[in-house]
Length: 293
Image (cartoon, rainbow, N blue to C red):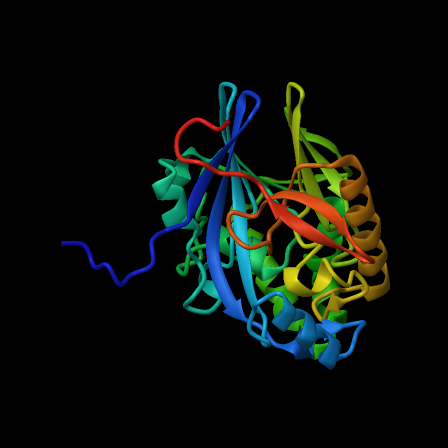
């Protein structure tokens, strides 16, 4: 009999026109109010409690798989891999649940090169986790993290981020494509969302009259940042720019009723954004077993 105490992998499919988008849960890590910037710890804690969440935020993580329309599978981000705590690194199990082998992945679109998004590219032995895949990342993002001179001039506290980015992409060698925006593969377009990192990009997925914006790290702590978009996180490379991006994107998606997904929204992390007083609320998409209504 299976061990009923072990967590099940998290993989949930959503039909988007002729495509299927599958949310892949990579796990979680224990955050802290010390990570919150732009507002007081007291306000941040109150927002957590008002959202029926622990005062110390639990930060969840998702990657996304795009299949269908005769294409080979495309992965958006790779999770933390072995770089993160034991509660993370679950994208491979979620992929297996979705019926996809790592060797089938033809393209990995990277929203940015933080380790929770790129760490899953490499196995503990240093080999490529997706041996047949091309990596695609914004040229500005690559220029920020990957050159030798970028590592040498990085503050000591930040050097592990630069080292991990380099380790993650190293086994792919020439199979690293740097883009300047636009359509990266048929139906998926990069959307610049700078601030969190210099080349931080969302991914707009379009099939027929259906579309989805995967906004990656616009929001890390949903109970706090939807209600108070001024709140940022210590991981933001440029906090002011990240804040401006978040406020702009929240206004746009609420106005346009855009279907969104997020790396740090609670699984399955698909839905829409509604205005709620001076802030916003996340409205999860309706999900049912079987065919979607």
